[in-house]
Image: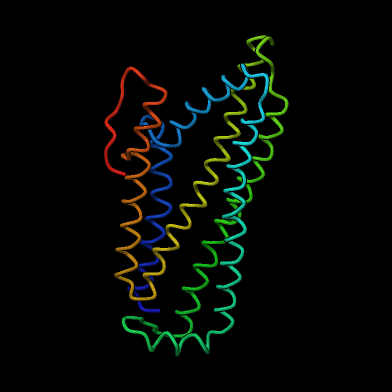
Length: 235
């Protein structure tokens, strides 16, 4: 494989892994969608304890779980399709070479690109399935939630640990979605490595904008900080 392709692959890994660690560290002292949702979930759990009928809460959690299940099942089909393409390399390469702007240096290079996509979606699948299981556990905890008349210590412990579990489930789902976005950047590699590197860089910018600077984050913040509203602007 040409050196530029190896450099592009390294840049892709730096963007993905580097942004993951950057976001994890920065959210310790900066408002992000992830840690803001933790505050919103605390309010949700506090109000759920006050309600006698909690079917709406369990149903809401079930909707979140079904969203994750959809992505997990979709990922399996994507992996199956990629493996099918990998097994039909002799037929796929001539078809793609006939398309404009597609660069295929060798059979080995083509197969490596497909394998990178397979590994990326396999990682996403494991994150989605783990998130799905964690939401299953959370449903059990919802069923065992204390009543409003129970001791405050019991209620606080329930809220703390249930919110922790829901945060882990949400984070796993987020990592799976992040793998999807970087997999889309990998498609640029089939054109040429420069497009691949530019696409990976753009993905990092989009992820940062949405997780740290989006109007969605401002709306979540405003919902729990009523006296200090942020301006809603952008996407």
